[in-house]
Length: 283
Image 1: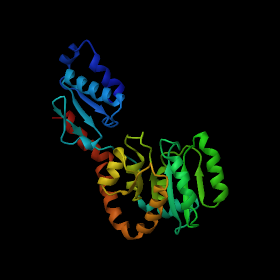
Image 2: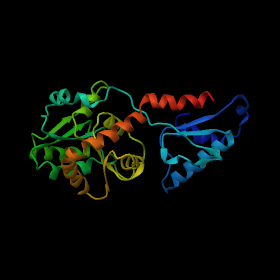
Image 3: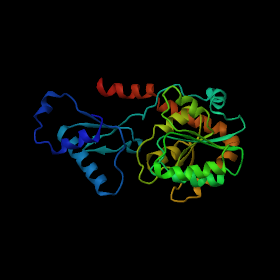
Image 4: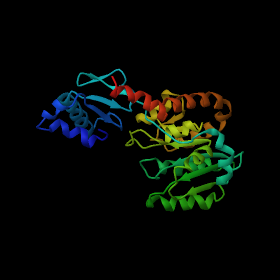
């Protein structure tokens, strides 16, 4: 099972006779363990535990923070949160030429639907300061929530040569070039964002460090595996300061970051995922 919407109702199912026909129940929660303190998180955790207990199921998650724990008396299986594609740093020169960046530009990438949950207001506020350096560029990839378009237009008017916006859907084959063109990927997600992020491993596979929120699974991974700089997204100036810091430290820390980014991307590759999932069905 892949979604909470399928797993949780099992906790309340009246009939469990179907278990006789199943040799083994493996329940995948492809998101993350509900680690918040709200009512919904408490209910999610309780219902998941009950469902696993009633089915004698085993929980498989992408959330390595649960490593070594037991739920409903069973150990939790951790599998990589996988990525796939031709992401690599060797595309950098071609990617920069494709999107109009020079080799000397410092390019900050934000990708995906740009809204408050993904921290886009923080990106706009930080850019007011960061783009005062003419060598810095903001690379926005994806559609923008309507309420933020006037602020972006005002920012473009102030820095017309420093903002590149791909206001369209980017095909899978173009994504490796998008990431390879960047010097840093911005992940200043709001506190309400606690899930995993497909952007993070693809940035790592492209050898591009991140500036990420300090909370949730994204913050945990960025901090634990040394994938860049983590910030408190409650502080509006934190992102601008981190961009300043990254532009200075990228030269001195590039080798170190390249190593840790590569290690993380290899550990979360599709092949690593396949190798970790295979034993679950062939024990």
